[in-house]
Length: 134
Picture 1 (cartoon, rainbow, N blue to C red):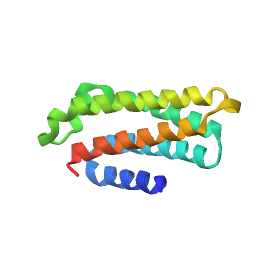
Picture 2: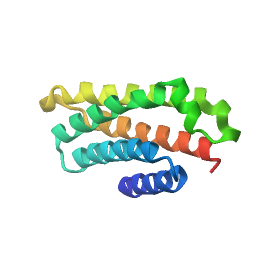
Picture 3: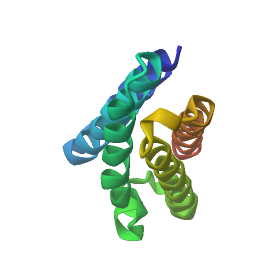
């Protein structure tokens, strides 16, 4: 189910981004990172969770820059950059929590991991809905 949601987000990004190849590339990185976290949950792969969270944290900075966010927003959504920044901060918080969970694989709380993963998906979807007017 989650993979379906991620796939839908991914293809939505592709269709929305159009000519902006760099933005498509960045969103593909996020999609792959989220899929890796999901794989870690489904197959009990703590390293996958850790690596996926690392990838999210490494790339979230791209969305936190005000200028960058304003550049890719549609003209009618220019005001939404603050919303996108807030969403990026929340995604960063959940990804850091995933990293903290993966530090001690023997004592990992998978329910917390699943909750953090779900919240990342919620934040991604929320931003996409607002920016695209879904």
